[in-house]
Length: 490
Image (cartoon, rainbow, N blue to C red; front, side):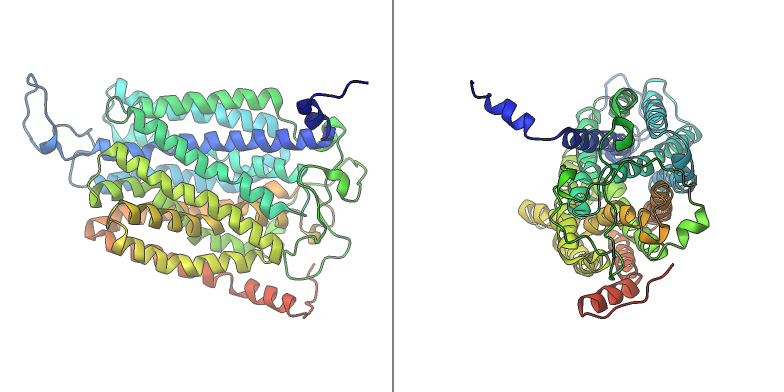
């Protein structure tokens, strides 16, 4: 008998369950990458909407009345342009925060495939509509605010649905590492969004929105054609979410050496049809740890989203780069975020301390933000290094809370087998965090005219508050490591 080709041997070495799990991880990665890809262009285009026109060569046939603002895009040509950018950001982020609390409820009750597909198609539409304002010569602030608000609402379909889908397919054993790698879609989307927007920002900034809009709409079609919501739908083995006896600390992981994609190394669980009712909003709040992590994420996301929306403009103003170079340099923050999310997942898997891992990274992030503001622009090597460190320390806790922690809490033992809580818990945690995401860029817009130093002091204060909110859970985890037992709740 002839031996099989090496590639075929590799393919056949994985079980059918493993291939399905890999495909779900890959598809949901692509889906949420496209969500963040479509959010990023606004931060790149800001420095094009309001420029220093005295340094720009104007066409000879153009009658100029104001040499400083002739090249700016009305209505962002006034001295209050930073406040208007803050309003524009908040239209998206407030709508996103409000919609997120309801999105999880819908996500538990509607088919995830239809829900995600519809959300991505509508996100593509509203992202493209913002860019079409360039070609339609629209100069009304209300138009851009309305498009941003509608886009914020439909973008809430993404996060609860993809986390619920991944949680349906993967058990708890190496969830921190798996979701740490998987959550790099946030940073990958930001990087791709920055690069794509940067290609068109100086020539035709409308395409900086239209191209990402087409991309996310295309992924919506792929979702409709290929997404499988649960292992039971294709006769695959359901994952094991709990150990038979779970000990404190609160979110301690299984000590079994479970394979990432192959479920056969864990105890086999027969597929059982789930007849449990979707959990209520108040019921989800009663799950131990949900409130603390939700408010911690509020301040952590405040810092992360302030960087997301204002970092390119900060680099352009302080380091005096053009819009494209500032956008390209800002992607280093997201590269650091990828590394930070993976490290946070690995450390929390190894130690069993989700809260302690987040708190440690937040403690180090506060002085690092101070240093970046003071010395971050002293040469390109310093800028690169500081952006990578800040990205890792700021986005690491944010990534861990929105992925592994949300999945842990959504399948917590206190639910007694109710598997329909994951989307609601994820929506509560990310919805609360999105309040911070809305407040951060707004405060940055209001504070930045008084000086960028004050913006960084605000970010450092938010980091410290996020750390303090986890103090009870950190204490509980440390007691667990020292051998103390804690009375089970619920």
